[in-house]
Image 1: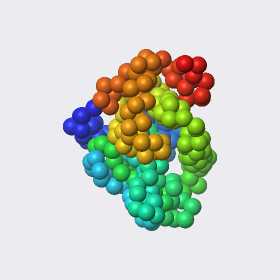
Image 2: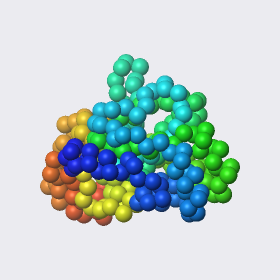
Image 3: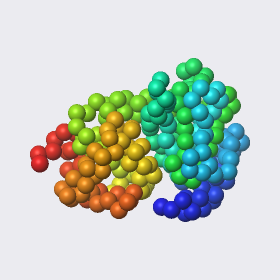
Length: 247
């Protein structure tokens, strides 16, 4: 996807209300009546599209809001004591981020756009107030927080895997699953992040990432065209991710 196409997508989506957003069932998966949806819409702030490299918030900023990706993609990262950037996650349309700041009322990571993106900002104090007025919204909020905790646990599991093949296969399977959840193709998708970001996230070198992608192509697990990925054998990719590859 070119950045110009991303920009058009973001421009057309940042004004979309929750009531007619195709991602509403993923972002806030509860059934709301129209008046309740309107009240939720009133507190959500939709700014202009953010461009590649723009920050949504930075590490140590005060925690005031949680955010939802409407279109595009984001990464979060922390800065290590020696000044290096450590990528901590990637976020795609329909996914919430920014909840890292809830514990200490201060963000522990920075969030940066990987491509032109549209973001919904949900002021947390107003959301908390609304949860006491709309039945089911509080439970849904806890569910979303729980999903974030589960995502962190999956990250720990991913990074604990022994081989580079398992780590990269797990990442591709994760993106495939998340795409499927958003009613998008589970077998063909665009990787908005760079090979450097992938290597950083997985604790590998860029050379290793490139070598494993080439190996997966030779094994006919995937086809790669720059940043466009086609999964040719999802079952075998699952097997590699779980360390069950027999080849």
